[in-house]
Image (cartoon, rainbow, N blue to C red; front, side, top):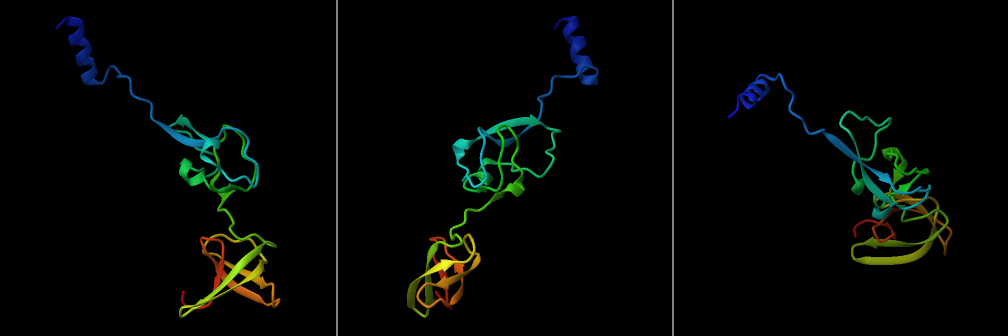
Length: 154
């Protein structure tokens, strides 16, 4: 080994020469194009953007694409900007003023009728629905298929 190589090796061992370190980076999903309020976010609408390790978003941000896909934007999201976690919400399966199916289930008996939702709601959220036939207000829980279940045991 040459004298210069031994000297460099000794300097590295003593910490006198900094070895090039891999720059630590972090990634955040950002919109590819403008996403408007009310849009459902699809995977093609986002890309991963890298930021330096010491980058801190101004507000808590969505850290993975999976946390944003399938959600609704509550406000306009600009291309290349991190997505604040507070501006996304779950898709509402029941929409205020829209017709919905009300299902009463108890001890194996199932009765269904039509109603009108009085509020927006997502899966497992309570919602009030007006029975179209009787005009009565009914409380129920939104099911994954969009129906509103009421009653005791399924």
